[in-house]
Image (cartoon, rainbow, N blue to C red; front, side):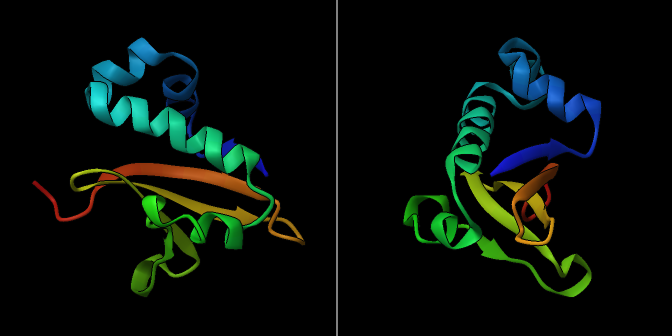
Length: 100
């Protein structure tokens, strides 16, 4: 799957581990980069949802059309799928699922 980023900041945090550590802390930074690499290797969303450790699932409500993937603790990676065959994952944000 091809990966795109909503902001340049998200892309830099993927490409530069030290920057991701400053933003999210070491555990979340490591998982953030790891999860994006897994998304890159996946053929489709069903493959991602079939990996239990990722806890990948569709969101609803005001986040309809987006997916969440577990990082650590309450942190999750939010992404959307684009393209005719849903072949592009767009990284939207890293968020704390239940707030602070």
